[in-house]
Image 1: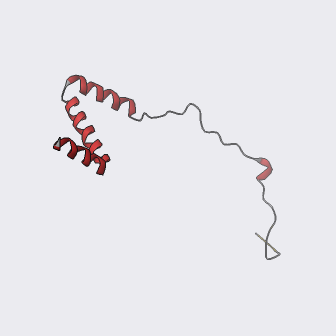
Image 2: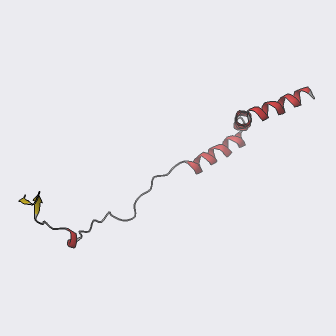
Image 3: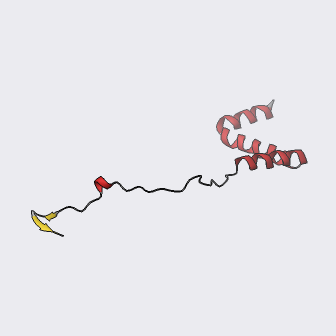
Length: 80
């Protein structure tokens, strides 16, 4: 019972580290076997980002109503 209470006490004080260690141990053991390697390879293939090919060309359309030169002024005087 001393070991179990020590494990529980360690988990209460630092649960993230204990869970990370457990995940690491399980991953290492499972990848040592062929079925485990295939499982993790399949997970990695699904999570890997794939390039996205655009389906259309970028189109730029001019807004004629707001595209014009107008008179400019600086402090009330005409300017260019």
